[in-house]
Image (tube, rainbow, N blue to C red):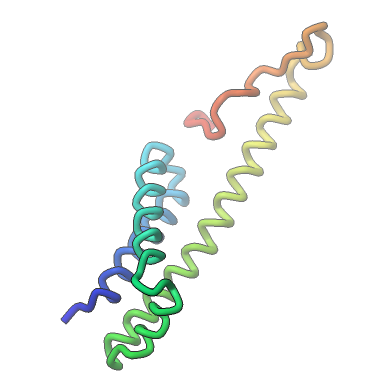
Length: 129
C-alpha cells in the first residue's frame, strides 16, 4: 500500500532527481520544465496539512519497511538538491567568466566612446557555449 506521504515524497524526489539530470546534461531546453515540476512538487510537500512539522511527525508513524524507503528517498533528494545548488553556482560562474572574456575581447569596451560591451544583456545561458 502506498501512503499519501510516500507518494508525495516519491514525486518530490523524482522531480529533484530529474532537475539534477537536466542540469548535469546542460539541457537548456528541458530546464524550464524540470524547474516547474520541482517547484510544484516542493509546493505540494510544503502544503502538507499541518506543515512540514506534521509531515515529520507522520513520517515517524510509518511502518518499518515503508519508513526506510521514504527516508532513503528523502536522503537522495537532499543529496540531489545540494548537487543542484552547486551545478547552478557553477553555471553562474561560467556565465560570469564568459561575459568577462567577451568584455576583454571587445574593442568597443575599451576604445569606443560608447563603451558598450557586446553580449551583455543577452541570455544567462547559451546553447552555443
